[in-house]
Image (cartoon, rainbow, N blue to C red):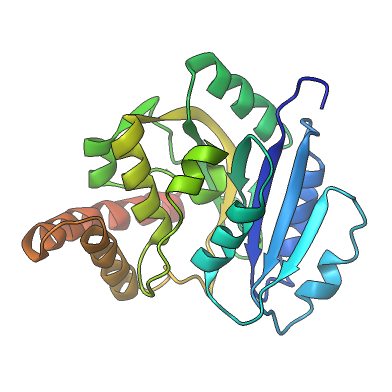
Length: 255
């Protein structure tokens, strides 16, 4: 690899026929070219499979789950077969900036980060970008992460050996990525944030987070999964919900 570390990009997908082409293309268009793209199809019933196989790049590895198992299981499948020094995640409806891996690897090496994330733009399902940017805190510690999850999964770059120790929990109705980041940041101290919007995050019409009640339940379950008792999990969920409402207002208003 000519001294360049390999990045394993893990892309779980399910019925993403309307968006996955752009997501795959944003990986293949990276200025940093030393990557493998592992796509895990969770038994899609639309044309997702056909679109994936339109691409012939040898860096793409396609896996189809034996049964529909959920996004956490799909990501874990990718983690277990990844061979790169680093792991990055990209959901099949999100899009990366062309220099995302180049800039984030340089940043991670500069600050000696084991896990890093970036700021994010948001777009609607049709791809129209909102003006507001979710920032990235330079040093995001455990206490701050408990208050709100600033880490978009599709922006994460993490050492494979660290991610392999903290696979995503597969219990239903939980923010599985939030649980993982809490455990990881509690272990390593901080997640380093590159405050450049290198991710375009799609607010999907069919997102599991589209319902506020469902999202609150998932957040509560994430805190419980992280070891908090009923009272503390409830208090943390209320605080998190207030932040989520404010964030969505800023996104949709573009301020």
